Each structure stands twice: as structure tokens, then as C-alpha cells.
Image 1 (cartoon, helix red, strand yellow):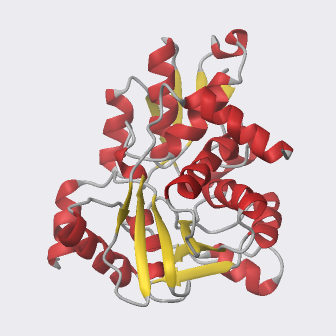
Image 2: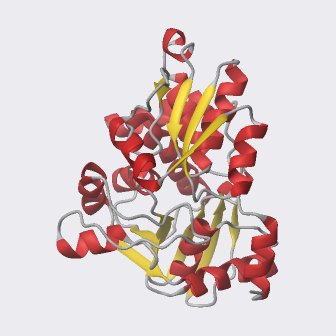
Length: 314
């Protein structure tokens, strides 16, 4: 067994009592596309992020954990870290951009976390330095961490067990930890599967970087797709992505909103913007035909905003 698979198998054991094995259900795709939805929005925090956070915590010494936890997150890893910290009875500090959705910040507070809202540049600097002034705590990176990616890789194991003959998978690209974690396992066990990232055109740095052959900075416009839209790709994540992925599929905000509406109507499932991009990308046909899995990465969206998006209200 490769070291990657060993790490993921250990992660499965580490997170078994915290993260759920989520269902894989038939989605609304039409022939020749058979769409399946991996419902990570049903995790205790409404997002896949609990997998990576729980694995990091399990592999961290109690001495380091006693200092408390620190992360930089727009909302979902923030909730994963706060959830784990509450279980351990330790503090959690969350550095979030000022544009973070209020519903995600309220969720962090309900879980006992302490959010600190900062300008986007300061938030991104926290990713890069893995520190924040005045906070002495153990930092959990939202994506650039082998233990986080191993936790995310457990999703791939479940996919293979539940649908052994799937042809492609589409995964929201935020920082890359979800895409690369899943892809690392699939390249070992199912090398013929097509693997695509999904991005939105209001901030799609991976697609631009793959085209250029090197990390690029792009324009970023805040929108309801708050979990994945960004300006830049971490160089180390770019190198992983171009080795592991078959490309990035960029969708529009309208396509994402239509995917949210379609899945709500057909599957009675609430998706946040990032997850909707994966579904929209799969429905576009650009991931190919056959059995295509879209990773529904989360469902943390303000319900009033969700209602406006799916009804077309302004």
C-alpha cells in the first residue's frame, strides 16, 4: 500500500467518530450523463471540512492542542475547527475575511469559536504565514496540509466503495485541499477516472494558472460563491493540481444558481455556491459522459439568499 493510501486509511480511523460517511445519491443529469451527488452538506457542520480538521486534531499532541486552535477561513473550515475545539474544551480563533457570509460567522459563534474579521489581504496573509498577531495557538491550514488532504481523501474511498464504476468526478476548487486530497487517492486506485476542479468566473485562478503553466493572479469579485472564488493559487497547490487533475471547469454565477435550483427541486437538497459550481460543471457536459460524481461540498448558505437565488428574485 502506498504512503498516500496508508495516510488516508489512518484518517478514516481518526475521524470515524466525528465525520459521517455521507450518502451518494442519483442527481438530475440526463442521458448520456448519469449524475451522482456526494452529499457532504450533511456533515455535522454542513461541510466536508470536518474531515480534514478532525484528522489534524487527532494527529496533534495534547500539549499543542492545549494552546487552542487557529485557522483562516471564510466559514467552513472555521466551523470544522470550532466544532473540534468545542469537543476538546479548548479555544478556537477564526480569522475570516470581512466578506464572509454572516450565516457562517454565526455558526462559528454558536460552536464557541472567536471570529476575527479582517480585510481580504490580511486574511490571505494568515494563510501564508500560518500565524496571526496576538494569537498563540496551533494553526490548522484550510487546505495546504497533508493531514487535511488525507482527511479529504477519505471521500474518495467512499466513492470507490459505493460506485466502483464511475467515470469522472468534479470537485469544487477553493484552495485545492479537497480536489487534491480526493485526486491523490483516485490516481492510485482508479487512474482512468477523469478528475476536474470546478471554479466560478468571478475568481478562477486555477484555470488561468493551468493555461499559463504557472500560478497567476486574477480579478476576484465577491458573490454568493464565497467558498471557492479567489485571486491566486498557492504555488505548492498548483504543482499538485497540474499533476493530479485533468483540468478546471469554469462556470458562471447564473449556471451555479440554476444548479442550486435544479438540485433543490429534484433532490430536495440545499447547496451552497461552491457545491453548486461542481454540479453546474458536471451538467455542462465538460467533464464528459457516463457516471459523473459531483462533490456537494457544503450547504452553508443563508436561507434568505438561497431563496432569492432559486426563485430569481433580486
